[in-house]
Each structure stands twice: as C-alpha cells, then as structure tokens.
Amino acid sequence: SNSEVSTVASLTKVTNVEIYKFATNVALLYATEIQTHRVHEIPINTFTAQPIAGDGTTGTLDGPALSSKFDSPRSVVVDPSTTANAKPDLYVADSGNHLIRHIACDTSACTSRTVTRI
Image 1 (cartoon, one colour):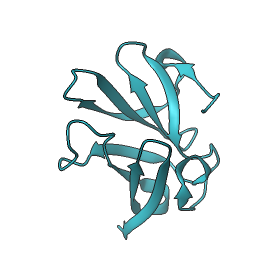
Image 2 (cartoon, helix red, strand yellow):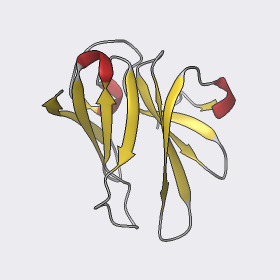
Image 3 (tube, rainbow, N blue to C red):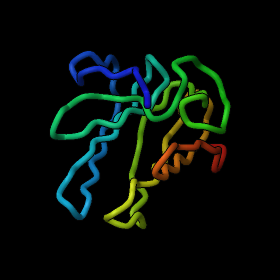
Image 4 (cartoon, rainbow, N blue to C red):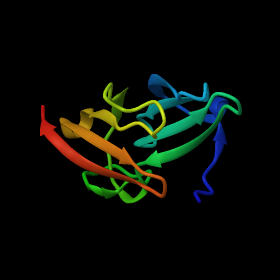
C-alpha cells in the first residue's frame, strides 16, 4: 500500500479532475498535479488523495505507475470503455513531455505506458 496519503486541500496546482462512478455507486476522482508530477486517486467518501502514478520527480519513464515519471501532467480522462465494476484505465496529457500516457490499473497495481507523442 502507498503511505503517501494527503487530503485534497493539501494538493497544489491541480489542473484537472475527472470523476468515475462504479456500478456500486462508489465514486472516485482522478486529479493531475503539475507541481509534483503525479496523478492522484481520491475517493469521494473520504476526499483523501493518494498518488497512483508518478514518483514525484520530473522526467519520462514508463512501467510501474508509482515509479513512472511525468513532466507537468495537465489533464486526465477515464477510458469510456471501462466496465463499471473495474478500476478505470486513464489517459493523461503529460504536457512537459508532449506525450499521451495510458495508466492501467488492476487489483494490485497500476502501470504507465506512452501511447503517442503530441
């Protein structure tokens, strides 16, 4: 589990938020934070932010999402083909690297990979 948990109020320079609702009516927010080069997951019932991608330093690196590197991620969207009972796949505009990145989560971990250069 990730020990880097913070309240939504403590995030800085959030540039985009996307909401995802499971079939069970549980809702999650996904937020990009350009200052820390991370993507956060925020359960609506607790508003406690937890990074799911980005190691907190600038760069370009795919792989396990918490070890991956982003440079000023500015936007996140939920893949519309995600089923309502699964963690959603995300697409992130990694603006400093001029890349679209894909974050795929399963029950144990998330991974990050580059989709295309923009």
